[in-house]
Image (tube, rainbow, N blue to C red; front, side, top):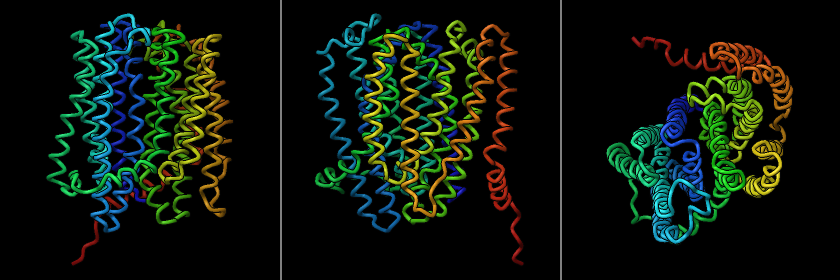
Amino acid sequence: MNVRRILQLLFTSLLGQGITVISQLLIPPFFLRFFGLEVYGEWIALSASVDYLGTLNYGIQNYANNQTTILYNGGDVKGAKDIQASAFRLLLLLFVSFAVLGVAVFFIPIASLLHLKHENAHVAALALYLLILRVAFNMMFSLLANSYMVVGQLHRGNYFQSAQRLFMVLAMALAIFLHASFPVLAAIQLGSLFLFFFLILIDVSRTAPVLLPDLRYGSWKQVRQIIKPSGHFGLIAMAGFLTWQGPVLMIQIVLGSAQVGIFQLVRTVFQMSRQILSIASNTISQDITLLVGKNDWRQLRRLYDLSERIVLFLIPIVSIGSLLMCPFLFTVWLHKRNLYDWKLCCMMAIISAVLGIKEHKTQFQSSSNKHEDLSVFILVGYAAMLLVSIGTMKFLGLYGFLGTWLLWEMIQTQFVLGLNDKMFPKEYRISTQPIVRLTIFMTIAFLLAGYPAYREVNWPLAWTVVCAVSVTAVFGIAGYFVFEVDEIRGLLASRFKNRFAPKASTT
């Protein structure tokens, strides 16, 4: 367990999530101010209709970069170059395929299928085609940026990805301010990827020439071999599409673009805050892989325990804090306090808490390549969830979808806990006691926070902020002791003390 490597990734993850927050804080208000809620909902629906294509990249990138790193650090440089080159061959083939087959969107009634009212068929098709190209090229960009892991500098690739996203967000905000069309917004996303892809190539040629893609290595036979182990990662990514983009399309069809806009805004609030939990889980991924490779179950069990404490400690702070800050955010961020629905926000807060647990646990499955059972289970489950939600939405609207989603996330979390338990040898089996403790803690927390969440809509903004900060602080202090975080604080303090302590004189 390398604390320095974890802290490096922690910093770049914080930076990346900061860019995500900037995007979420900037783009929706600009859309609402200059175009309106329905146009924003249509842009979200149009983007979601192609984002599922990006799931193809998840498996290829994860397998290729992991395998390249293993081979290179094991001394097999040629084998590493072969895997990298074969992965780029496969992604180039996908890009060409997307570019050719994507022309079909000009012959499909996109506007009527997605119930678009503010864009004509030709403009919608052009925007969709550019979005398809963006998804395809992003595959190669992500593979190259994440290849820095091979030489132990993944944080460097993260810097480039963060810079690209910030550039794109600022350019899109300017374009929305100038009332640009959907195709222009899509072209900005695609163009920013091209720009930063070549910037990474320049940096790689100077700092780590071994990472430069060279298609003379690899083979089409090896391309076929890459597809099979990447498949289960691809299923997980497809399930991710069903989780995040699928609901948008389903709500658009069943309830309309206005409800899509409301759903997306409420979900965005909790996505922004839950980035903290994602960071805590993602920064341990490299160490999980290394410890599994070394069969060091003792250290892996310790990493599981310490990271779990951090995540469980943060979940009440993030979910309750976000819930109580919603009226303030809807007023200051969106200037739409009337959109605040305390029941919708409460349900999303509970879902966010369950997601925080699940995402931490699934990290151990995906980073150890023990994800086959998980991939099939969640893909089938999310598909069933969306089908069931059609009926629940017709009777209960957005509440019907959120209730269905919450039930499925609870079932899935229980399943993942079982998979994690099977992953460890018997002498290192995990305990569900911390999760039980969190369940009791969160039940009490939501019962106590429910009343102010209901009343806050009529409170002055200053009272809302004071209440949110005070209640969150109380839960934070209580959680510090309930989840035994003191040991982690001592561990980090000792590491920093050793790092910055003056070196003994050798003279």
